[in-house]
Each structure stands twice: as C-alpha cells, then as structure tokens.
Image (cartoon, rainbow, N blue to C red; front, top):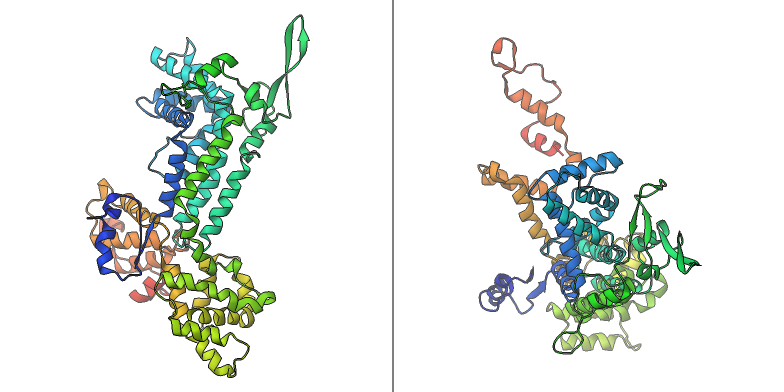
Amino acid sequence: MGVTTDGASVMTGSRVGLISQLRPWASKQFFQHHCAAHKLELSIYHAFEIFPFMQHLDKNINSLHKFYMSHTVKRKASLAQTSEALNLVFYELKRIYRIRWVASEVSALDVIRKSYYLLLTNLENIKSPSSGFDDESKATASGLLKTLQNVRYYSLHLFLMDILKLLEFESLQFQRAKGTFIGLQERHTNLIHSLETLKTNNGPRIVDFLASCKCRRVLGTADGYPQLEYHSGCHTRDLSYSNFACPSGPGSSDPTERFELKQPGSAADRSLRNRLFDASGRGSVVDMGAYPALDEIRSRIIDSIIDQLRNYFPEDDYSIFNVLNPVLLPNAETLHTVFTYSSRIIPLARRFGMEDDSSESETEDHLSDSDSRDADASERATERTISGQFGLLLKSLITSHSVDFCAYKGKGPVKFWSHFLETRTVEWLPRIKNLIMVVLTLPISSAEAERGFSIYKHIAYDRRTRLAPKTLEHLLRIRINGPPLMKFKPDIYVNDWLKKHWRSDAPGGQRQKESNVDEEIKDSDSDLLSGLF
C-alpha cells in the first residue's frame, strides 16, 4: 500500500492521523510519502523566511493589490484609465498566498513586472495635488511609488522571478497526474545545478533588464561637479551604484515613455538602515525596509534554497528508483552490461517486499559463472530472480523491440513503461511486471486529489446546491478525466433531443412534436452515448 499526503497532523499524526490508522491494516511494505509538491513549497518558504527583505517584498506586492483591488473601485478605475491613455494592456493585480503553489507567486510577480511603467505613472498621478484622491490615498501612493522606483527592489524582483521560474517548472512536474518517482533524483540534481548557476550568471529577466535599460555613469568632472550621462550596455555591478532609465515596454522607442529607477539614499544611510546588530552581539542582519544590492545577497539566497531542498529531498530517498529511468538503461552498444545493470533492481525490489531469497541469489551467482553447463536450466533459474527477470526484459526490449525502445526512451518513464506494458508482443515475467506497475502507481503528490476538491467547488457553488449526487459525480468525472471539450460532438445530442422532446415554440403557441429531424439520426441510446465524444 502506498499513501501520499501533505504534512497536516490529521494525515501524519502519530496517534490519530490517517497514516497511523492505515499502517496496522497494511503489510510491512507500507509506503508513506510526504507530497513532493508540498515539500517543495515548504523548502521555498523556509529558505526565504530568514531574509527580512524577502518578507518586505511580499508585503509590498500585497500592499499594491490591496491599494488597487480592495475597499474602493476608484483607484482601480484610475489604473484602467491610465492604461487606456497609455495604450497599455491592463492586468489584474494579484496577491501572494502562502498556501498556494509557487506558480501563484510567479504570476503575481509577473503581473507587476509587465505593469511596471503603468503602475509608476498611475501612482505619480494619484499623489499629485490635483488628483482628487484623499490624503490617505496620496500618502500610500507616495510610499508605494518610492519602493517601485528603487532599482534594488526591481532587481530583486526580477532575480526572484528567475529563481521561482525554475522552481515553478519542478512544482508543475510534481503536480502532474502521471508524476512518478522515476527520474525524480535526476531532476532534483539538475534543479540544484541550475540554481547554482544563478550565483554568478544572470537569469533571463535580469539579462533583459540590463540589455534594454540605460544606466547612469560618471563621465568626468566640470567645475568640481560630476558629469553624468546614461549609457547602454549595463553590467551587474551597475545594479549596486547606478540609476537606470528603462523603456515602458518591449520594443518601445519613445523617449518620453521611459521610467527611471534610482539608488536609495546615500551609502551611509543605506549602511545604517541595512545592518544593525542585535542586542546579543551576534551580528545578525536586521532589515529596516531597504533592499540590499543584488551582489550582496544573491549567493546567500541561492545557498538557503539549496540547503532547504537537500533537507526536504534527501538523495537516498529517491536514488533507488533511478534504475527504471529509461535514459539510464543500457542500449544496443552496451548490451553486454544488461545483467550487471539489472542487479541494481534488487534494492528497489527489497523496498517493496519483492527481493530474492538467499537460495535464488546463490543460484544466480552460480549461473553467472562461465562454467554453466546447461543453457536452458540457466535461463529457467534466471527467471526465478527479480534481477534475472529484469535483465531478460531489458535484453528483449533492446534486441526485439529496438525501434520502440529508441523512440520512447526520451518520452519519460511513464510513457516508456506504459507503452511496453500495453504491447502484447512483449513477454512479461510476473515479478518484474508487478514491481514496475507498483512503482508507476505510487502517487508522488497529493495535488491531483486537491485539484478534485477545487473542481468540486467550481461546479457545486452556492447557486447550484440542488445538484443530485449522481449528476455531480458525472460532471466531476467528465471535468477531471475528460475527454476535452474540443472533442465533444453536439450535433448528435441535439438531433436526438429534438427527436424525443416536445417543442414549445411552434406556431400558435401549441406544443407539437418535432417531425423534421434528420432521418439518418437513428442511433440507439448506447450508440448515442458512445458517439458524444
């Protein structure tokens, strides 16, 4: 039995949790797993919570959402009017929820990025004396504008998006209905490597920002005053010292439609605001609301994320599944290593109670000797061991099904093994077949179950409380399992309904039976249901 849940005490509690109630009824091969998508969210949360400026960034985004989307429609209407005047797309601002997937936070950050020039222009209008807004709105707009004009805030905003985009892709892989443990360790390793590169290399959003904006540099002095001018070709170090002038949007060449980002205050003021020592004398950082330079914090943020990922995803927990990763399987050139490779299946088989007993293992070791005298007896003995069955299966796939083996090897573990499980020409031995089916069946995430509850709320909302349970079940089944709406054929259903029902729009107001239905539609009820999709 395998169960995947979130970390709530009702699920994992040691006394009355679901797992503790199921374990006595299950065999010793009970497999419990904390939802991978939830673990990824927890690792992100704990990685960011030690940085006050990250919490301040989240608070600022939620403040923008509250300012425009809550309490009054006047501010939102003002933003919409500004977007129309500037001929810019109006995006609904979103807030950050700690209980949502990482994709929700990425979406909220991306809306701010795409609406940056619009927000700066509208906040500037609201805080002006002639805007018609009350003093409280003007003061709030002034504070939000000051934060958005901070180049260090904007660079952190973009850097965070580059990080979360990598984590979002991994989260979506976990949330897939056909997610599997096979290949998880390899994806996890690749994710950490991609994060490591962000320590020294800029992500696509920072690269685009530096390429599209101009930074102010000192050209020299005249009469004792520095001569400043904006230049293109900015570098990462400019994010710490220079002001920036950026276009209003991609491809914008109008010099009047540019926004300026400034460095916050003097160096002495920034030092005082950014670093204060606590009373214990340990020298911990206490942020007073300012954002540090990106060069000062990028390595610390990445290291914190990687430490949490390694804490929540230990390497030993998933490495035993790598043996079934199609990318790592032997091929025609390494066919001689098949039975050596197949021995790696033993730890996985042992985890699910399918390991070989001692006599079978000894037989396999004996048969691997070059002194084997009877080939038929050797093959029969090999078939009795799980590693032997795996070796024979791989040999058959590589030699007898080489075309499909090469074609499906790069399509992912689920498609690869599902294809050969459904192929009748593949001879499956029982133990290895059961093991692979168990591994493919194990849920890697509880997102699919949670998605069902979300769909339920979309269907059975307050104005549809009288839906019959059977109707609700049918609607949920179609919505969750498909087929997609594009494959629905309404003509057959409509013609059948017209043939079987009375019409109320007949001349004279009399109800008449529909008579001019296409005579070719004579399907039975069973044929109708089969033809709807």
